[in-house]
Amino acid sequence: MSSLGWRIARSALRRTAQRHRYGDHPQQVCDLHLPAGSGPHPVAVVLHGGYWQPPYTKLIMRPLCLDLVRRGYAAYNVEYRRLGRDGGGWPMTFDDVGAAIDLLAGIGDVRLDLERVTLIGHSAGGQLALWAAGRAELPAGAPGAAPHVTGERVLALAAVCNIAHAGRVAVALLGGTPDVVPERWAQADPIRRIPLAVPVALVHGARDETVSIARSREYAAAAEAAGMRVTLIETGGAHRDPIDPQSAAWHAAAEWLGPGRDGSAR
Image 1 (cartoon, one colour):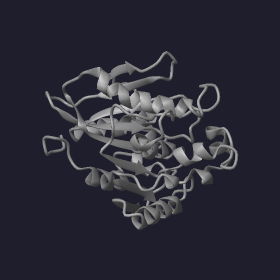
Image 2 (image 1 turned 90 degrees about the vertical axis):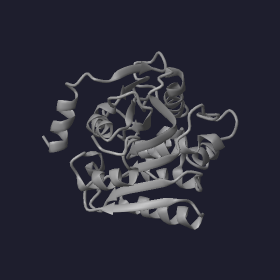
Image 3 (image 1 turned 45 degrees about the vertical axis):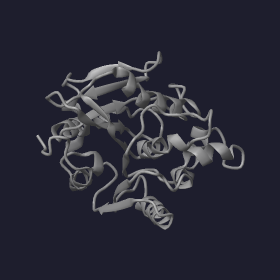
Image 4 (image 1 turned 180 degrees about the horizontal axis):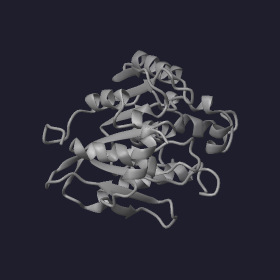
């Protein structure tokens, strides 16, 4: 087992998070990890990857959430319906992510600073984070439109920035090709949603064999050309390095993220 695998396994034994449910489906749950103190704490919405499919779950992001808490963030680890047995795809996966984020407004916890929300996603979760950042600009009636909670920035880790390169899985996610359902691709594909109104940081490893670093380079170039505030951080690691709290990739991401409200990492 890798060092990240051990950290994931150990983190599963820590029952320190609040469980919140945003629907009746077993996958419609989120874990809220809170730092010590009365806050208000900036919030990190955390979206896991796995090409929008089982078997990967929010558990893979637990070590990252614990590190975010150490840095002074409230970490909100989101589960959502995925393709296959979960009944995900369009629009369910997108409805879930939108509803999960909006639930933050309904929790009513004064320790949460909902004016300082960062959307953090890894791999396919990076696509969902970038999508969520543009929810306010979605057409009326679209999945996730008219958000109650918005993100002030995005941290996309080894993200699927151009879902056309996800091939058949992307077609399954959106229920058809761009020729068949062009409006879905226009709403869901990050590179088609440029420019976003919020800053974006892309962290990607040069040795990533799952999602090529070329995707982040393409997105950064298009975003910069469109006048967007975008930062591309290239590292030497592989696909999972940015979600490993001990990696140089995550340390670079955390430096961009900055400390929590108290100005120090605990």
